[in-house]
Amino acid sequence: MKLKDILSDDLIIIPLKSHTKEEIIKEMVRYLYSKRKIDDEQKILKAILDREKVMSTGVGDRVAIPHGKAEGVKDIVALFGITENDVDFYSIDNKPVRLIFMLVGPPDKTGPHLKALSRISRLMHKQDFRNRLLESHNPREVMDIIDKEEEKYFEI
Image (tube, rainbow, N blue to C red; front, side):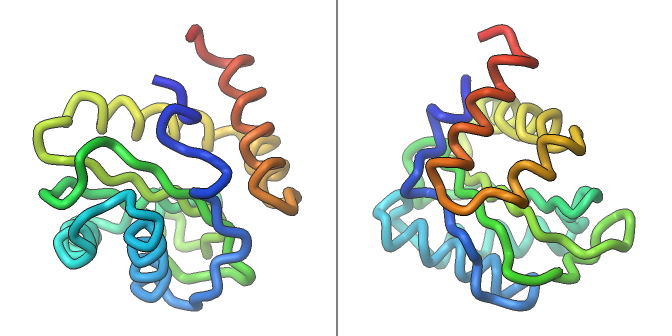
C-alpha cells in the first residue's frame, strides 16, 4: 500500500490552526468528518484519544502519528498536517511536534493499519524528508515529496 492510496491533496492541512495536542486531534478528526472520510466523528475521536492515554503518539523528531481503529470508518484513511507553531505532544524525546500524520481505520483492518503505520514511521525517520515537508507550502508539494520518497525507499 502506498500512502497516496490513503492520502490525497484534500487530506492535507497546511497549517493546522490548533495549539494543543487535544485540539489538534479534534481539528483533524473534524476535518475528516467534513470530508466524509469517516461516518462517526465521536467514535473516531474517542478511539484516538483513548490510544493517546495509553502512550503518546509523539514519536520524536517533531513528528506525531495519532491513530486509532473504530467503527465509523469504512477503510484506512490518512490525514497529514503541519502546525503553524511547535506543539507539545508529550513526545518520547520531549521535543515539540510540527508534522502530524493521523491514521484511522475500522477494527477489521488491523493488517493494513499496521502496514500504513510502519510505512509512515519509516518515511518520517529521515531528517531530509521531514525538512522538505516542513518547507512545503501546499498540499500538492507535500504529495510530490511523499511520492518521490516512497519511490526511493520502497519496492512498490
